[in-house]
Image (cartoon, rainbow, N blue to C red; front, side):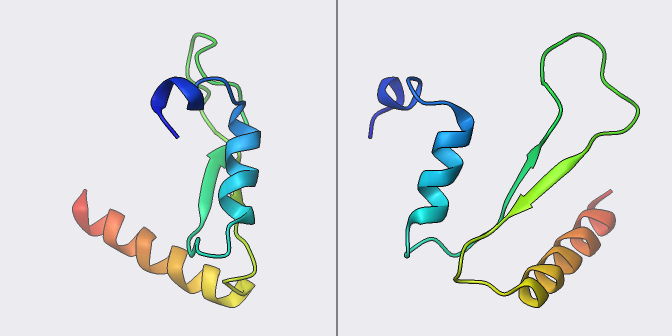
Length: 74
């Protein structure tokens, strides 16, 4: 799929397509808040989505590792 083709799809449709793929092994984290509407909110709400290639506990451990590495990078 080329970039111009991707521009025709809504973000939610793209996320659903990635999660539908049995070859995808990952986690999608996306903001539930509207982006680009002026000022940044003090707090954002995020959604975490994953497919059947992960179990909830595995996702939790993965996100724990990512958060520790981000903290070390700051």
